Length: 488
Image (cartoon, rainbow, N blue to C red; front, side, top):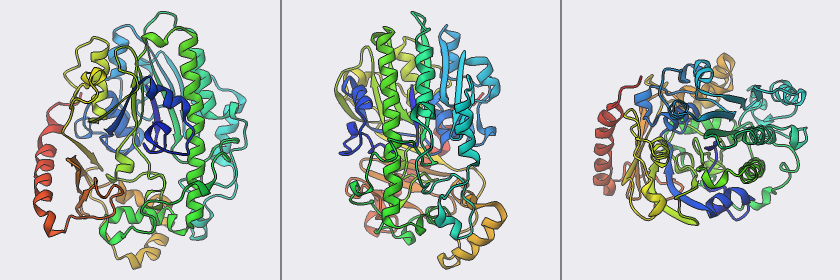
């Protein structure tokens, strides 16, 4: 299972990007099936990953945030524990952000763990420590627009000047591939499960050369929604994030510079994916291995002029890449069937010949491996936000004063109170999307004609019947389905 973090589905060659260099990820698609309508259950790292590995909705497993308290323990049944109990060697190489210490100790045989600031567990080299220290402590010009406003960013979501000052072979993405090559060389004929997990292209948006200079900002003709977005017609929480994180202080060219670095991070990942595929071939493992490439959630990637994510349901955040190849999977095919990432667990179980566990709420989509055009789900749902109410909205004109006050109290990430609090939910069906946002406005988008979701039709009288139909269906789901399985 290859898992990226915060990868926008459109930023891959096999999904139609004309500029990005991703020949190895494209190779998986050429040898398997590319799914065009796969969605995460929540656009936030830890809850989405827990759902991926338990097959459960967040309202079932009760993880709504990204802190360590939301990580699952050894007592929680998952894909990893299921395979470990059946004799599989289990390995986590890369980002965790899902399992707590008790789980790691009990259910993983091999752990080489990284997070956004560097390597934290496994074989540690002096260069690993140097990368970690630079990402934590180095003082350099970064995100200066925010600092002009009084915020103290650190290595956050904004523009970081200059490349990461290390050769590729010392950087995290390369090291994750190197650890994986070592792991695969030792497996022989033993069955194994590998979570090959990259902290990138999540912020901080930084990468070494040659990837830093690989893409010109001039490649990007337009940032969808940058000049068109009307924040009066979109949830207040998204306006707050854009402003508090300092994106309003950037020129369009600066935003494109960030996107160019983001593309470089993706190509670095692609090179590491190529090394994984080569290692599988060299060790005679390719013909008996299922490969699943995905991301925990998407990224704005220039949409609305931003990078990163928020507590919302735009397709740039909700649609995720999903590419599957392996024995029994058709080659060079695409599928437009709707899939939720809670479906991954039962699908892998069925592919291995195991009965999907009772605790999973997902629906196996193995039938699509042989018949990619057949139907799976007719709609997808998502939820986001803790059960705690968010702070109330305030007039846009009061932003500077509120920002100064809150930044002085808790720092630039004060906007998280808006984006992660307030339980909200989404349904997407038949080219329409309805979103219910706790203590914020409703959203209704006709995504087939408005793919960038700029025109909120929730208050359009001509769409009233569509909105009420979707809203009723969403409320029925929210009150029943996520509660049909008790989390252990």
